[in-house]
Every structure is written in structure tokens, then in C-alpha cells.
Length: 110
Length: 115
Image 1 (cartoon, chains in turn purple, blue):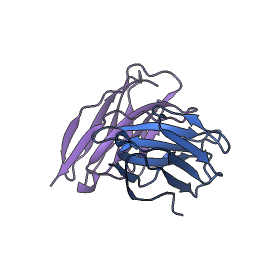
Image 2: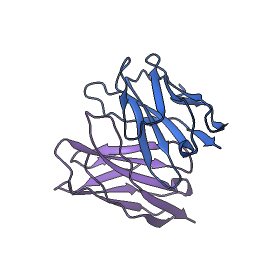
Image 3: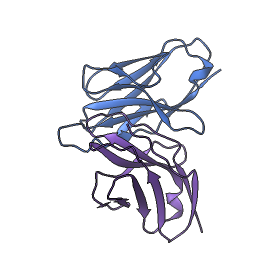
């Protein structure tokens, strides 16, 4: 699986959009970009995934650059409950293993 | 619909003791996984089962055994616990049906301390 690079930490004000970047310059054509988050000591929670088109669901939006070498997870109106570690993972959809890096610690403050 | 459940939630063992961590899912998923998470680190795959009746090693399988008891249940056994196995253990499952997104759903974790 391709390696990802994320900033170790970010801050965001409550109610504002949180934009979390991820670099995956070695991504291959059959690999998807997945985002998970882990709220303190809980099991990771799936957020969103995409191949090359932008995606949106009830939790977040995922913007993938045209060359697919980077992506941004957008939480449109961050709340205090969005404080968590966010993991960007690149994975072949046909192979089950998730490779977790260090992730980005997002802190949402009042 | 409970999703992925794990028992026990907490466990303290002495070095050399054995125990089995239990995991069950009620989503009719084909694949199941065991991960461990050490403090300040991401999750690492121990073993996985792509489908009922099959198991494969992940990144850190040494010291562990697994059993895919049926489609719902996937257990992780520590035969002789060591302090290096002190960690939080997460079980996960995914559909992996053709055309599925292979989203993995995680349980709440088992916090294991080996003294």
C-alpha cells in the first residue's frame, strides 16, 4: 500500500470548517483513499473514502486532487466532539489490510 | 444490531498466563481482523480472516493464535502472555463482497495489561 503523510496536529475553532490534508504521492491506480478517526481510546470509525472523484456524506467531504497525489478531508462545521485522531489510509479495495500511520490529532476548541 | 462486540473490556494477566479475546459481529460480514494499538501509535494488524475457514498472518503475529469459529466469531489467543503484549486490542469486520467498499467496522477494544 502507498505511504501517506499527514501533519501531526491541527487546531480548529468550533463551528468552523476543519480541513485535514494528506499526501499520498505514490498512490497507484487501483488504490482508494480512506479516512478513519479515533476518538479517545475508542475503536476507529470510518468517515469516508474515494477513488478519484470528490465525495460527500453526512459526516464529511473528501477532495482528491486530479493527479491523486493528495487529498483533503473537510469537516464543514466542526464541533467539540470531532476532537480525535484522523487517519488517512491508502488501500487497494480488494485487499483488506488497513495500514495506520500516526494520523493527525485534531483539536476543536470553543 | 450491536455491530462488533468484544469481550472482555479489560484484563490483567501475569506473565506466562494464557487467555482468549472474543470478538463477534452481527453484520453478516465475510472478513474479520485483529489489530493491536500501543500507546501513541497507530493500529497494527495481527491476524485476519478473509472468509470463514481461512486465517492469515498480519504484520505482528508472533505470540498469538486465532480461530474463526464461524462467520460471526473470531477469537485471538495468547498462549503465554508477555509484558510486550500489553496493548489495546481491536477487532474489526468488513463485507468484502464483490463491489463492496470494504469498509471496516471496529469494536470498542480490549485493554490488556501483562504484569
